[in-house]
Image 1 (cartoon, rainbow, N blue to C red):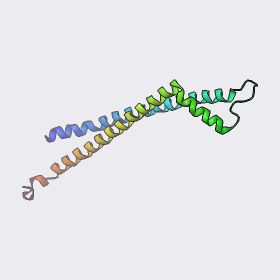
Image 2 (image 1 turned 135 degrees about the vertical axis):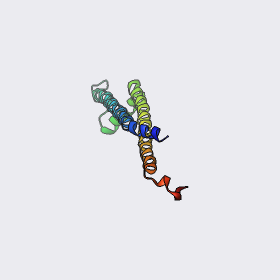
Image 3 (image 1 turned 90 degrees about the horizontal axis):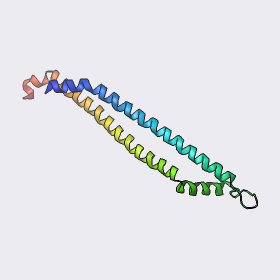
Image 4 (image 1 turned 180 degrees about the vertical axis):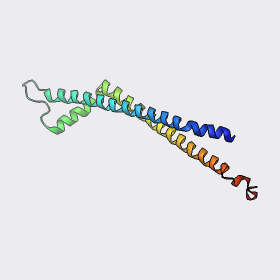
Length: 129
């Protein structure tokens, strides 16, 4: 049992490092998604800014009307909807990975404490029996 715990303790740093690497990659992927959404929103903003009526006058002449038009277009844009859906899924993955990392770190601390307890000699003392 103690040998198994010692082996587990020796393997934990690599396990934790692997989880941290996975988390880093997920965060980078999330940043790429944010940039894609931003690019798509900029395209919509340019489209809104260039929209004119039949007389050539800007259709969205003030900030409030442009903001409202952008909200409507974002809500109806399939690319932005897909990117937002992907981002929500990725956010869930990131949270799950953080939980996994915390669990691994807690396991490492617990195993270290158990091994320390058994190696301290307290277990062999008459008071422990």
